[in-house]
Amino acid sequence: MPQLEVRMRERQDSEQLMQIGEFVVDFVSGEIRRGRECVRLKPQVCRVLSLLAEKPGRIVLRDEIQREVWGGDTFVDFERGLNSCIKQIRAAFGDEPDAPNYIETIPRRGYRLIAPVEPAALVAEEGPELCVPHQSLASQVVNQLSISRPVIRALLAIVAIAGITLGVSREHRSATGKIRIVVLPFDNLSHDPEQEFFSDGLAEEMITELGRVSPQRLGVIAQTSSARYKRTGKSISEIGKELNVDYVLEGSVRRDGKQMHVTSQLIKAADQTQVWAESYDRPVNDTFVLESELTDHVANALALNPRATSAEVRLIPATQNSEAHEEYLRGRYELNRMTPEGILKARAHLEKAVGLDPKFALAYAALSDTYSLEPWWGNLTPREASPHAKAMAEQALRLDKESAEAHSALGVVRFYYDWDFRGAEREFERAIQLQPGLAIAHYWYAGVLSAEGRHPEAIAAIQRAQELDPLSPVINADAGWYYFYARRYDEAVRECQRALEADPQFGFAVSCILASHRQQHNYQAALADAKQLMEMRATRTGEPAPSLAAPDVQSGLRSAAGIWLQRLNKLSPHTYISLYQVAALRMWLDDKDQALADLNRAREQRDLLMVFVDVDPRMDSLRSDPRFASFRTGLHFR
Image 1: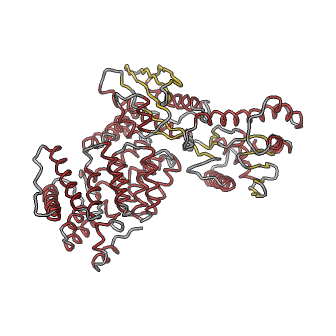
Image 2: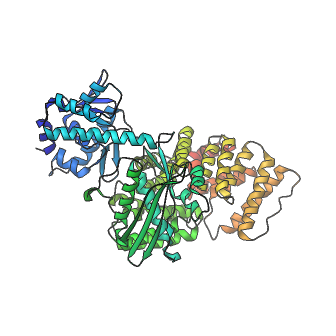
Image 3: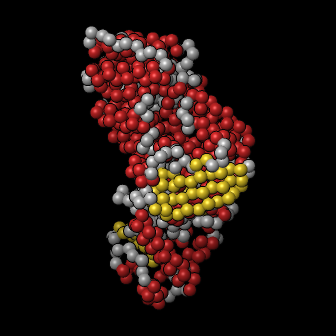
């Protein structure tokens, strides 16, 4: 019989009533009560909850749950059974997995009860308001309960944990109910520019790990936004105001051969006071251990539920091979540059990483991303790139089915290549459930919702991505496009202007502004936007910008469309060109016949932008054409 069941049967009835958040749980009857409401749990579900309640605020590993509840020799039904138990517990508490108040999922490791816990007898004495009892009151309660000294110590520990967590969290919590932190790129003190990947990679992995600590209480700014403050001359308070964060974590790395010296400090943004600081000397191959220590120290400094510190629940390394990890960091460094050359270099490093460690799931997920990005940069067609992206993502999930990055990578392929909206939605929802702070998953998910015409949900999803990554030009520009597809043109322009504040040369944002102005029949502004795009290209290539002189603004816009079509035609033998974009330009020229022909060719090429054809206002005048209806039937969106 599992030991947990033995312990439960040995308890006295007076111990069995526990207050968990707003609910009273009776572990004898298996009932969860709130006022007159009562839910009865099945015995196995109750045993899982009892195990979590024994360690409030601490991670209970999946292996421990299996051993204590299912028995050490039972494996086949454990995964399905545990998921069902957690789902029933959450349903009883009215809890949400992506924004939990009771049961928090710790990806790949286990679960944690994050609601305050205390004996129900204390609640009866103190009334409905949760409080931390004085020692004298605790002693009175102990005298009233007929329980053994070990149980007394356990109950007092539960009360202490609940009280400490509540008290300090209130002190730090912002007006939004969530602490916000940015991890700045660590300074490379190695005097070797080639080591920049390592200092940047350490900071990026710290962002990921902090995002997993307590996502319902801690918001961590994504790497794209934090990277903009690399070697910045701005003060901590300026960074805090611009990113709307409460704390800034900064540090430095000096790497000398196989040793590294890391310093880090946590600073309160409002007054630039140091909250915590530490330095570490470690072997380079102990990077994961260092990251785990750093994460725990920051969590403790912010009075979050700290992760347990025993060796068995330390951060699980993505790879045990230090060379593979180094190649992965180099690949991420190149991928974050977001250039065609960077993508190719990233792939070379990531392929080395999986060659060194064929079980390195994160590296396969990143490899999938490199292929998914190729058509956007024109390096490969969707039919050339997407099958590779899909294979890499599926391999990542075979190795680690709880990898949020892998689910997100597969979701991209499901959406843009398979045109499987439902399948993509499942992948992004799972990624967000596993890692709520993964900005890119919210970003991609918004695209699926927008393509399905679920515009309020799409805008909510992209706003979540913006909250996590406020300075990303791509996220802000795509927010503009999702407002555009919702036919909220003023807001589309506003969001794209935010993107241009971060990157004044980001033509993708100007294209959305231009499209919005055209839909509003503000042709004068649209022509100015077209000229701005021409000037941007001239700055980038060194070529003179073409003249758009015309007798009227409409003629000027048609002239711009003609110039762009000529350029795309010239580029098409050497690079992949989106025929959907070509069709959109044809619509500027009122050439519906050729636009329909281009859309049909785009369908055959699995053009990535085809997913938005049902919501794109630029295609509205085609919708009444019988040929468009026939074309739409052949898309096979699911």
